[in-house]
Length: 176
Image (spheres, one colour):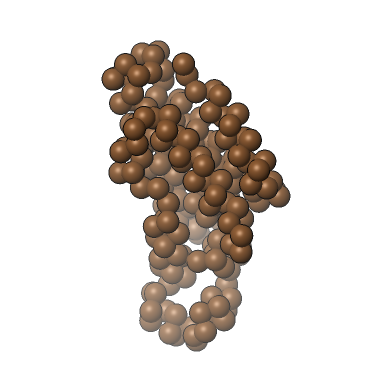
């Protein structure tokens, strides 16, 4: 997982994977089927450590859900001893045609998070906790974009304290 996280799908060879795992190529293919299937397994492992759609829906408010997602994002992209950035947020943004199907899976994962935020925001609009003029889709897209930006900023060298300031500024944009 860390090898894919650090170098991306296209930046990791079968040789790299075999050396990291300590097996020969036939064993890798027998165990995982393909490099793409191993990548998918690594993505599932990575995603298992993230907030789930159910956890986002269960937050006491949309604001707390967004704040939790962003705070979790900062923590995830700045873990000591781990690669910087987010394997899902910034993974496979630009890929060759031959890997478009895997990139589409990552887009789906990002969309699921955005849709979970949108639904949580919509619940608060419907409950009267947010003004009826709030566009839940646009607001969710804004905060999902901030989340992806945190990943890029971490890759560019931003430290946790700097990213925490970004989250504070982003939360100031929350509708009253």
